[in-house]
Image (cartoon, rainbow, N blue to C red; front, side, top):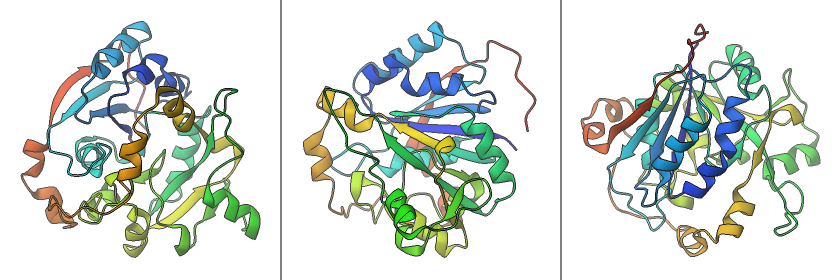
Length: 287
């Protein structure tokens, strides 16, 4: 089973220089088979920051960069388009979606691989622990699924997973794990029904309608550190754009066309390969 880590990014050069995500990937005992990064109409020197970081500390996995060419139709550049490009371009059988402001806990990929071998028709969503600093305090864990698990005392399955009921399947983002063929079969993000961050907030619901079980990784060992609120506050990043992206947009881009979505010629003009950073060590055997 090959696992591709995929990551969209937009104007986050300072964040990549801090190597928040990359250092957590380097520290994994069993790393991903590749990391694919989509530069979503980046206007700063994000690419240079990534290259500089890779020169500073080589990885045990190849890193590929894509340049997104398709227009982002909403007010906030964070959209479903780079994710859909990544779903299409990744070579792995299983996809680990990571945001650029996350840090994975030790052995996260190893544990997720083991869990996923027994749950092929599934998507596993992470628990997010928001990072707090003295300058930008964040009270508690802000995740509706964590609160619901604690309030309702849902039983935890082997491996620390909880099956998410229908009422909580609309959430998306962060470090979820899903089979590539599963996310492609529903057409990726449905860009005609996007809302928050111009992304398909009903991704989990649509997967459930396709027969995919949504699981939530509740245990401490799988808690992902989320730098987002602290980093955004410190860098004053896009508060107006984030607020403005709450509503729907109606620009016709790609309908949720299922398999036809993936056989169209749209991807020929949606992105182009920018650079591949090759392995500096012998690759490990693929699982």
